[in-house]
Image (tube, rainbow, N blue to C red; front, side, top):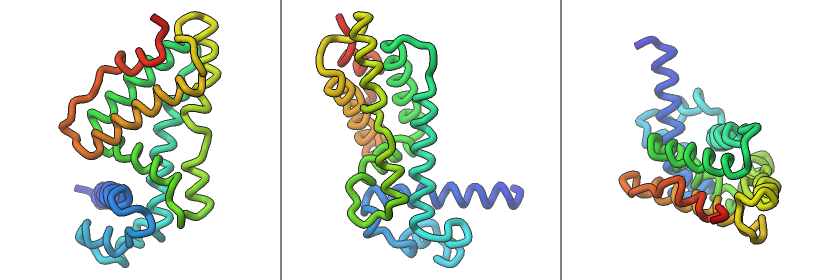
Amino acid sequence: MKRAEQKENRRQEILKTGLDLFIRKGYSATRTADIAKAVGMSEGLLFHYFETKEKLYLTLLQIAADGKDNIFELKNVSPISFFEQTAKTILDYIIKEPFAAKLFVLMNRAQYEAELSDRIRNYSTRQSDIEYSVNLIAQGQKEGSIRKGNPIALATAFFMAIQGIAENIARNPEAPVPEAEWIVDIIRNK
């Protein structure tokens, strides 16, 4: 194995371990010494990969935000197709990669961490899935593909169902995952 590949594998191990500790203990209670010990390295070596705990946390939030941004890049699809594709993409991904499910937990918890710096808090308070979806829901209601009701409440129901599923998979990767269609039925006009 080449040195660069070994270094990247080690970096990924640090990210996964840090993610596990951050979602289990919270940002404030997780120490870099805890992460270093869990991956079997010195704290000094950990700092060669991530200069600070905040940088490690920011990297995880950036990975989560990038994944979310990719989902919201769907263009030229009907509103109901957007929600169908979004649900399927997210659920398929969290089935294949438990790391993704844990990122959902991290993004949610970051909003409640009292000691987070403004830079970290900005990642967790970017435009939410719900805010982004409200106009799509209203458009789908006009077209007749999305049920009547408050667009904010419908978007909340849709995305909180996905959040809950992701959190369940993060805790129990062997748990059954609902069909994407079931989640879309929360908002679909029947």
